[in-house]
Length: 408
Image (cartoon, rainbow, N blue to C red; front, side):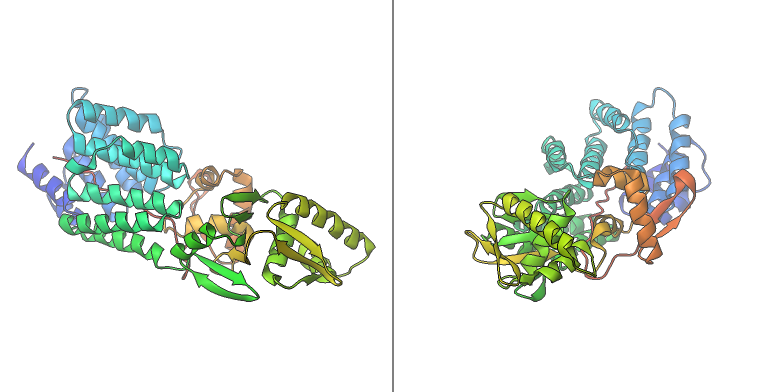
């Protein structure tokens, strides 16, 4: 490998894409194309980066399996950052196996990190944890250790284990200082903000206040009866009653939870739950049916007590009833879509559908509604259409967990 290629690779490993381009910007040989592609990816021109890396894969000969595998891993990272979640995972696994077979443990670890990050994005936390467990991070350079700890922190945050998340972020911060890469340090600082930014809003006895992630963890571990408007469930400790597919009953539970320890009049419940401005006997009959259904579902957690003017929650063992909702006033029907878009990356509707476990048409309707409200914007056409938004103030976002692909 000539001196310019070596110098460009070292510049990329140090987080200096402009320094790398100064050395290889005019080169069209395979190593030059690969390094140009990675540099363009670090600068944010993902379309150009992907094209250069594909040219590099074609330019490397059949005997240069390691170089081809490195380019494939770099392309997989571009696909992840651009939220192309349908990029073939088997191709990445084959490249990782090639790198391991040839002793390139650092880039093989990077490929494993990419696989774990993808699993984290789509919510398969157990699989992401198993993928990381197969990797010994002690031999990795500081930049790779930083990425490793960020993934561990991301898994812990998704599972509401704030103590484990803080420990992983502290290790990531130490590794980032050793790496001396400003962009990596900024990513760690951004990840730390998640633990210090309101993650939810707590409504109890008619008052509400913001709640950090640590507060959410403590609340769910307490014996309070929690009407969780973020996940559409009612829970007390480990007992969970899902109401995701029963919006009417959840709206009823939330209205009663917000009013506890008081009651809610029948007319107010009908107006809120059914959206009716005029009340007649058919509405009252339907309310009685829904109250009966909810009473059966919450059996063992709480009773629904009839009062002279309406209904009230009467928890069995819980000392209090609280409502947990989103930290900002947004359309709760589209809150999950907005939460993913606030990571600052561009998403396709198909990637959002895969992540949310919903149909693409449902996601598209949510995006259209958010766009009409000025919360998101789209660019591109057809299959290249992408959606993004700026982070919402006071709203925790999904982690973007970048890592480097050093080439020696």
